[in-house]
Image (tube, rainbow, N blue to C red; front, top):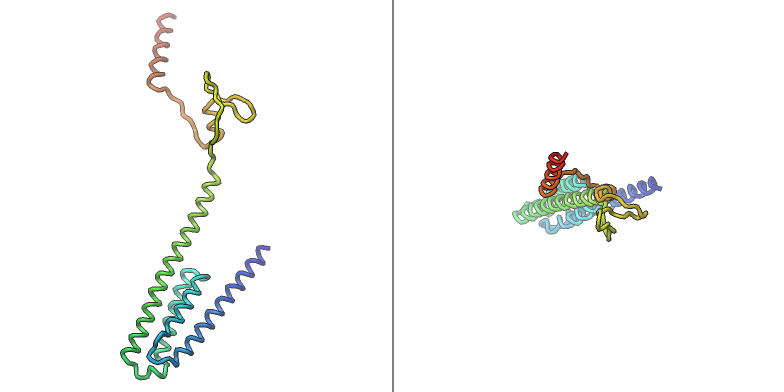
Length: 191
């Protein structure tokens, strides 16, 4: 089933590539007849935006170079541009600049989307590994043991270690240390 989905996706990707190349070819021939290079690059910008949906960052860069080359070819082979006026040249340079700037912004956005997707995957994996204590815990008022779901009483440290990823290290607080050493001194004197 997965393989079929992959084949379908590849076919869909090839379909999009063919549609984009067809649009670019139509734009090229339309632009050959357009005087002074007006809006000839707008169609290529549309193709670039279309390609953004299914191409990688590298693919967007290659598509931009290809579109810029087509704009230059339009400039060279267009019968209206045989005069090569300043307006014609400026329009083509503006078009190439807009294509390059758009590609830069699209690549940055694609990179941010890939980073976001990677972060979402990492966060989902981290959430799967998190153990969480919640709700009310029945605890003995005298010995401070906790009753588990099966009715057995466990030491607080054992219960928390078993229900989370916390590890305990034992020591004595200053008050308990003082009491313990006082009792040890008393036993040594008495004994």
